[in-house]
Image 1 (cartoon, helix red, strand yellow):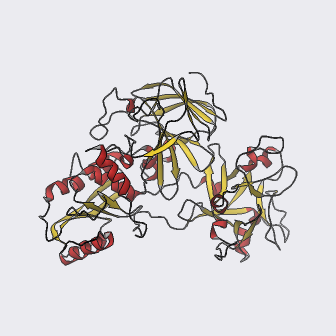
Image 2 (image 1 turned 90 degrees about the horizontal axis):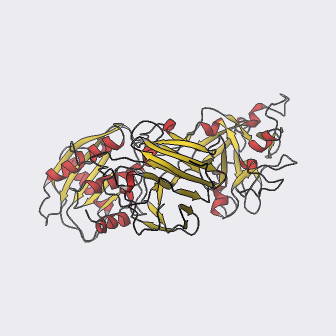
Image 3 (image 1 turned 180 degrees about the vertical axis):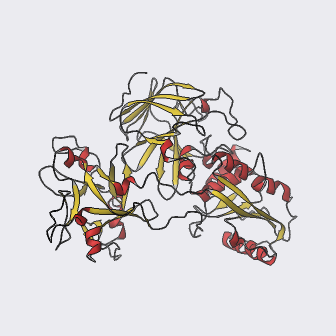
Length: 529
């Protein structure tokens, strides 16, 4: 495959915005992230020996912090301190209060336009200019130390301070800047919250596991010669290298197996003048039904059409979803692995390049530039058939949370080999809803068939990851002095400073068994190797 061809795929393989992606296999739906309700406690208040619990009151919609133990009087119930996080399927949650719910009152923690106030109110916005549903939406951002930031979507959209916070000297709760000034009355801990409602959430996931079935349809227009079905069958459902099926078995560690059936020589009729993905899928489905095969009994629909110049893509897929259209390249396995990544919820990846470097230290800050299509280890951004990165695997439910570890303190860490035992990924929260992901690969043929000396398997791969309803990776080029990303990993003896995370990572050594790291959290100088 050529780099140019991969770049074309990377640019055009999203489904059009007008097409509503079909969702199956764990598509997002509204669900409670924790069983029941839990207390939500503030770290600053705990450190100061004050009442820590976020609470409501009877007779008004006030929200403050106070004692976690109720007096049991008619106006002071434990339920006033109990909250549940309800997933909204877009990376955000509603925070609902039990007392208010039991009383039939507006139960959701909400913000307002024009002020930093928070109160309890209706969970649905009216849609007026001053009452948006986004005022009730919160993102829980793990800080790797047992606490989370609670960030308001409305405030983020408006470019305002987003974090729920407390203050010294009173019980007030408001939204404000997520970064503390460091003065005697403004601590980071004022923004840190602990609750079983959030702990139960874990890392965001959209699991796709078990036995899944795909209907592969090799189609052609009536003015085109039907494609040879054998290469298409091998590239999708075939056994062994290379096929989408064997790729998914390998990258999932056996957690996902894609089987199914194939229809050959399906005539879709006259070649249309325009490229309409919806019409193509409808025609393919109708043709399958005419042959007595119901596409709705399958988990995925994979359609290969005769090459059509009106279709400005190599492959097109719903994200997340359950269909893929191949523009006459159904024999190319890398196209299917890329597009199936979209089905799983993976966006096109990008790369941070030209980050400032001094000696052995590279710094991630606003001076870095961003490009796309040149992550050589990610099939979603120029990586051919190389296996999905660790963040995708965790999102798809193929790596247990115990092997994905958040780093919240300075120290020494051992990173295992991707796909083997030990810690598969370290994550460092950046305070803005993203995290720094650390991954270490070794050659694992046939898909990750690197040589032993390849820089891609002799350093720690660093990415900035945004995780919610979908996943987005940005590879950090930790060796920006060269003109290639083929040496992007952080090699032994080098340090990466992430100024957004206020953290730094030094790779002390790498072996066939993993990488030995030193990490600084809350500073930019890791301990010596």
